[in-house]
Length: 279
Ligand code: SF4
Image 1: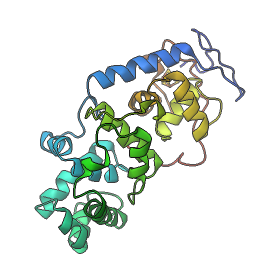
Image 2: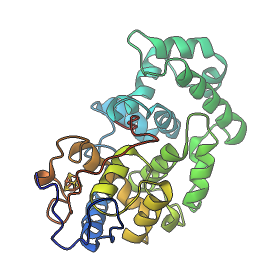
Image 3: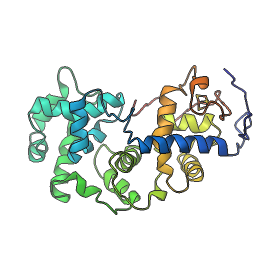
Image 4: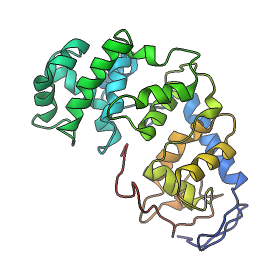
């Protein structure tokens, strides 16, 4: 491991002082993000889960996709995205009216055993509340949240009104809608990366930010990819999850390995540091 390396283009310094954003790192991240977009990648290699049937449900049902977003918290991504399919199997339906009013049945289905999620108390509430909101505000269609032409920030704002969807999950969902489903949202230059623990770790160690704050991450993403900062979201998250681990990062196998200053002494602390979403 080359913990103190500061070469190959990036202008980085040790000790937490300002680190100039690296054009090389930014270009490598952007290239990876564009590659993933071209491949329509969702979470891992173009698939949401390890199950074709579960993937098909997410891909063909906007309502299932929205429920999947609710599940993407505190559990591995593949398990989260399989949630709507398994919920449907247990309930025998994903009827919005029944999801909204048959709360005990939703709770029992989530609880299992085995449980579909860590949050066996809150997740069912989120599911029923989401179904109710879709009925009342979106004519029973989640796709009505994100019709073509809607500004990306507006979709993020709409998603955040759902119980269980905060800024991080809303940004992630909007980027997947654009990247994977080809929804023609406008104003994608206003998108960004999610303030996710993996994303933060990579931005810190790759020298794209000198401090771990939402604003610093957002500004660095906008600087690295001005036309569509959200393009970097999945690329950075995958690198953080698979290579830039909290301990024993795999720099030599990393997509950024040849250009990254490898500031591996840096790590995420404080808010969210112990909470790994989407993983
Ligand atoms: S794993 Fe990749 S992003 Fe993380 S420090 Fe190493 S080269 Fe940089």
